[in-house]
Amino acid sequence: MSFLRKKLDELKRPFNKGQKWEKFAPAFNAFDTFLFVPDHTTRKGAHIRDAVDLKRTMITVIIALLPALFYGIYNTGYQYLSQTGEAFTFLDAFIHGAWKIVPMIVVSYAVGLGIEFIFAIYRGHEVNEGFLVTGMLVPMIMPVDIPLWMVAVSVAFAVLIGKEAFGGTGMNILNPALMARAFAFFAYPTYMSGNKVWVSEASNIDAVSGETILGSLAAGKEVTYNMWSMFSGAIPGSIGETSTLWIAAGALFLILTGVGSWRIMAGGVIGAAFMGFLFNLWGANALMSFPWYQHLVVGGLAFGIVFMATDPVSAAQTFKGKWIYGILIGVFSIMIRVFNPAYPEGVMLAILLMNVFAPTIDHYVIEANIKRRKKRLATVTAKSA
Image (cartoon, rainbow, N blue to C red; front, side, top):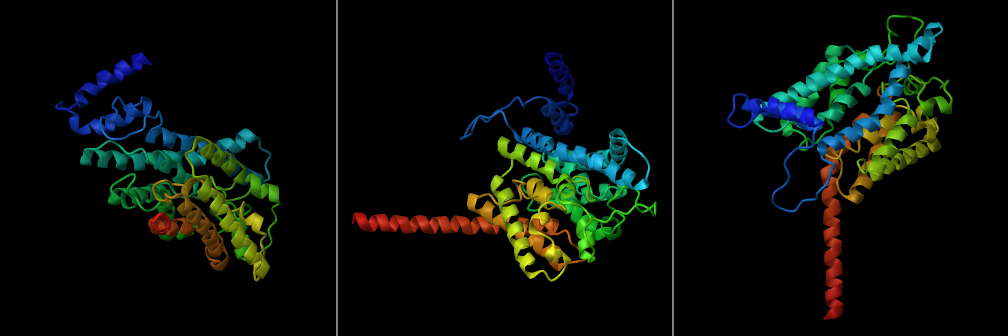
């Protein structure tokens, strides 16, 4: 490692202050700090010494995403090959899925990081690390056959409008990955909905159907998948959203490392279960009659609650606020599913809606705490008088 450190120091000289390439120092430093911890520390003011910085936090989230990603790659191949009638192996399915998904990840990172580097150089600040996670999330919440140029345009919109317009990482009020999906959904609806977009090459082969469980229910059809298939993820859907099993593994990792908020996750599950149970009592259509516990394991609900609702920038910050925030996301997700047959997957809109209201939730939680403490102080003062 010392050899690599010396080589990087040699390469860094033209980028130092007063040197020829000083303006491009943020771009070089991004690669440097990706490999090594920054060589500077806080010199004044209160601070906590910790080995974990923002870049390491983002890498922790990426590690948590890997189980769902790898399964999504396999499931992409499995959904396609299982409907062609041909014999195939695990490796065949994984290779087919990788052939479809890896280019999406490359495009997402190339476009997003390219824009991040341009803004860092223009503004003269270090490259923000937040896109390390966003660049992985965007492909995982997209249909498998969406054209790569649409992925690129959606990522550019998310970074420019969702982040940089607000000042970059830490300043955005909406989750950038969901901004990319929302843009793609409303700009290119035929590529983001229907029964031919969720399975690889379904639009080219008549024998292949890619209808999701929620899509079938919205059309009044019966569900042919059992509970295990729904939970394990052997169903059509967005690349990373189908397997609640592997999403739960990622959630456990985030909770144990202290990176993800268990309050938001638990609140989301409680809110969704409660709303699903209420609709079960009503049972006016197929989506209302769909068992509440199955609502928790289909669609993007689990993925959204674990990896996007818990975004520390756009989520609520107070403990009580996180509970309220998570519960409302779960409630609105199921409500949108049931009441909007044209868009049975509601977690994206629910999270974006609550992103907007997160500061308001925290404000009223803090105000309530202040009033409670003032009342307690008045009581203590009166007793001591």
